[in-house]
Each structure stands twice: as structure tokens, then as C-alpha cells.
Image (cartoon, rainbow, N blue to C red; front, top):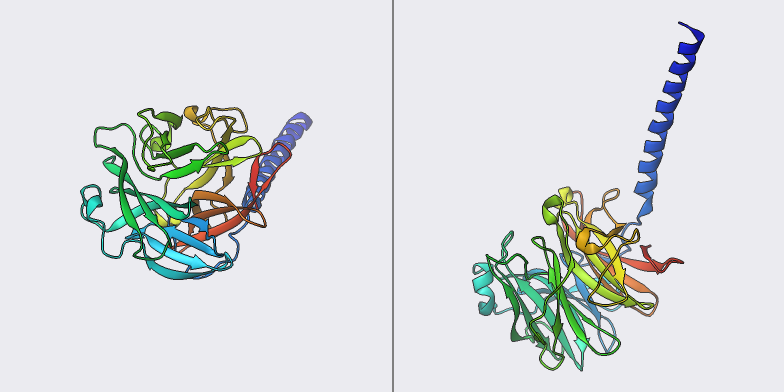
Length: 327
């Protein structure tokens, strides 16, 4: 073996070891990037959670479930079952659910002295879907009244009316963001007096062209002069095999254009990852964000190794470039 060949071989082996070590180090760094969910106790099963602060103190949480599952907490840590929003069924939604009582992705807020809840009715994989509005003065189980259909999509639509989120701007404009797969995330203006559409305009705010166009669960949050679009990429609802992850982009206008940290438009597949599978936390997604007395708070669901869907709560910080991170 020549001296030159030995040097080349040694260099190759050294390079391979460096690359391997670098890859291992990168995987280790990636695994350490994201924190585990904060401590929550009691009734912690949840899918597509949304939380609102109650005016009298404490929190009300709504999740996907038969008749919409409700939970309460006094401290954002211990949660207790609080019944169903619609214990007597939702016959008006049966045409979209195939008769199932299961309703999806409630978005709950408190506006003008009452609780509002936008929620979706559909079947898995179908674009025949609808978003409805319900209202309650107390938020208690059985107190919710149906305020009717807000928007619907059909089997021939190239968009999907699920995963609603209401955002109210500082100037008092109401906007509803929604969507899943197909041609991506949409936004419509809402009349504050009725909670229904203000006009016929629909904005396209995000779309993907890979992984079956998997983008859904939008949530728009205002902070420091930007509107931040939180959303989920990839696949939900597969237990520990779920690949859901939380992405973010931002815009100075609520209707966009939204861009990620690299400057890629969300309508071109852009999005900056801020939370993903790590350790025994699988498929974290369906983000909701609200401002509490101690910090901005991220609420989401994730899956355990057994495939159970659990409530995840973390805090959100903002870096020097005004991009959010989870801690």
C-alpha cells in the first residue's frame, strides 16, 4: 500500500467518521430542540384542543368529540371533565358527519359577554364538510345553542371547510381561517354582528404541494405588529405513527402574504418548524395560541407511545427577530 493511498484512505475514513459523528450530533441536537409538554393532570385526553380564559377566572377547554368535549381548569394544569356542549345531539350536522355525533376542532373564544364556538362537521378524508357556529352565555355543558351554518364545502370543492379559527384584529375586524389538504388554508371575513360571512371573498393563505398537500389546523395570532400563522404539516390521527408538526409563518396583513423565516411564501409550501416529534412525544399538532398573565401559551395535542391523544401545553417565547419558539 503506497503512502499516498494510505493517506487517502485515512482521510476518507476520518471524513466518514466526521460525517457520521456530525449526523449523530445533529440528530441529538434535533432531539433536544423541543421541550416536552408542560405538566397537566386530571382529564388530559384531548384532540384538537382550544382554550379560552373565563371572565370569572379559570379556563374552559373544548376538544373534538361526540357533541364536543368540554373540560375546565382553575390553574391551566389540573383539568376536569365538564360534559358535552351538545349532549342531545346535533341533527343539523348529520348530513356532513354521516349521522355520527363526532364533531371536530372546536375554536372557542369569549366575545361581547358570551362564548362563541366555531366547529367542523365532516368525515375523514372527505371535502363534504361544514363549519357551524354555537353560542353560550356560560360555556357550560348543554347550554350551547346552534347559530347555524357559516360555510360549507362539497365533494367537488377544491378546498375543505374544517379546522376553523376566529381572529379579531385590533381594529375590530373578524376573520375566520380554516382548511385542510386539497388547495390549502383559506380565510373569509366575518360580520361581528352575526358571526357569519361578511362577503363572498375567500383568501388563499397557505398551500403545500408535497405529502398529499398536507397542511391544516390554522391559527392566526397577533404579536408585535405581525400576524403569525400557526399550522400543522403532515399527518394526524395515526397514533404514535402520526407525523404532525407545528409550523409558523408571518405577515403584516392578516390576509397575507405569509412568509416563513427563510422568506418562502406559505402559498408555495413555506413554513418554519417550531415543534415536532421528539422522544416519546409523537405528532404534536393542531396548535392554538393565547396570551395569559404569565406568557403566551401554545395548546396542542400529541400522541403517546400507546397511541393515546393527549393535551399538550407549553409557553411561547419570541427571539430577537420576533419569531416564536416553544419552551
